[in-house]
Length: 248
Image (tube, rainbow, N blue to C red; front, top):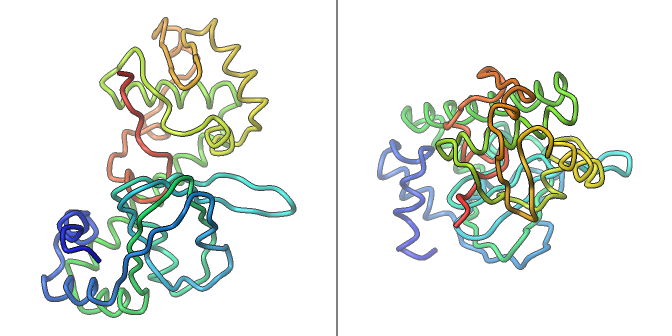
């Protein structure tokens, strides 16, 4: 592992408050690996041998069943995944594949659990991160179960604008096929839904989102803090899509 990577890792909320000796021990047992794009790094059902710390690139977390597949989250730097399985010493519930060339630190789960038992501040940080992930997943599940497809897309697009201080235009953070899967839709259904939203105050041109009438969009989305947040603690926990980017 490169010494200049350590400050970035140390600044993550998960590791910020743990004792210095324990942090040094943990990273001393870890190693860095660079993965090419399109590689399956984790397969659901496999033992959770490592906590992954994303330093560069992008990784999709996804699940499969009965010949079907869905996107659970997209992880970008600097963040960790999949913590819960590592702490429980349980099989991964999700698979992971790189969307682009990615540089990732692999922290052995056994060492993670050992320090979790003896470092109180680290244990509190672990519980806090797991709680943030849980709340993010509950919010997403509520949206999937309580909103129809048009309301889900409208809510997502409005929420991303609000994260950028009500920016009237921004760039989608992931490909539309990933967004569709995350929102429980097919790419074709997403495209049709986006087209219908032009009469409700928002237009999508490629990766660019343009809000043309915020009031109409709000009227359709009906934002709810118990579904839409904000929940900034969940960012970087590998339980949602990455934050949007302002359109330059």
